[in-house]
Length: 334
Ligand code: FUB
Image (cartoon, rainbow, N blue to C red; front, side, top):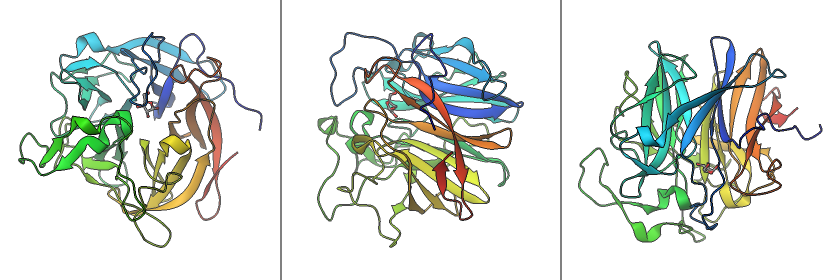
C-alpha cells in the first residue's frame, strides 16, 4: 500500500486517540508547535500548550477542526507540556484525559468534562489524585457494565522510572516517591532485570478519581515470563492503548527507542497480557504513537509521523491506515 498522506495539514498533530461518538469519528491528538527549545532525551522540545479536536464523517472524507478544546492557561495545576490526550463518553458526558507537568515539574494526569465530543472541555481544578507519568488511554468496557479503566505511563521524559516504592501511603500515591535524579533516559537495565510495567487503574463512576491505586500491567513473553528491561524491541515505553476484539483485550504500545508499535493480548482489562507482535515498523521521526478503532465496520490504526515537517521529531502529523485481523485475531496492516 502507498504511504498515506497526513490527515491534518494546517497545523501539526500527533498521538491521535480516535473514537466513534454518534456515528462520527473524533480524533483527540496532541497539538505540536514550533519552539526554540533545544532537543534532548527528556523531550523538552515537545512543548505543547493546547488541544484541538477533529472529526470525520467517513474515513475518506474531509477532517473538521473544531478549534481549541482545552488550553493550558485554563488549567490551574498545569505548568507546561500538554502531551498525548485521550477521551471517553460515559453517563451522558465526554471526558478528556490529558498529561502535563504540574507546578513542580512532575507529570500528572488531568480530566476535563464537556457535554459535546468536540468540547470545549472544563478542567478539574486539580489533577487526578494518585496519577503520575504520561499518555493516559481510557477504555470503557461496554461488555462489562461500562466499567472504565485508565492505562498510562511513559519512560524517559514521561518520568515513569522516577517513581519508587517506599514512601508514605498518602495522596493516593500508594507509597510511591518521586526521584528527580532519574529524569531523562534512566530506565532500569540489565540482563535479569524486569522492564517497568505500564499502569492501570479502574475509574470511579463519575470518571473523576481512581477506585483504587494504579497497579502494574504485566506484559509476558510467549513463554510466560515478564519482559526484561534490556529487551528494547518489546518492552513497554509509552503510548498505551486498549481495545477489544472478539472478546479479547488488546493492549498496544510504543517501544520508544526501538520505534515499534506492538501489541499484547489478554483476558482481563487488568492483564496479564501476552506479547503478540508488531503492528507498525518505525516511521519517520523518533516517536510513534497510535490508537485502534472500529469505524463503519472496518478497523483502523491512527498514528503519526514527521513527513509533513520533513523529519523534525517534534513536528508530527496524524495519518490513518486500515488494519486486518486473521482467524486467530493477529493484526496486520491492510
Ligand atoms: O507528544 C509528546 C509525547 O511524544 C507523547 O506523550 C509520547 O507518547 C510521544 O508520542
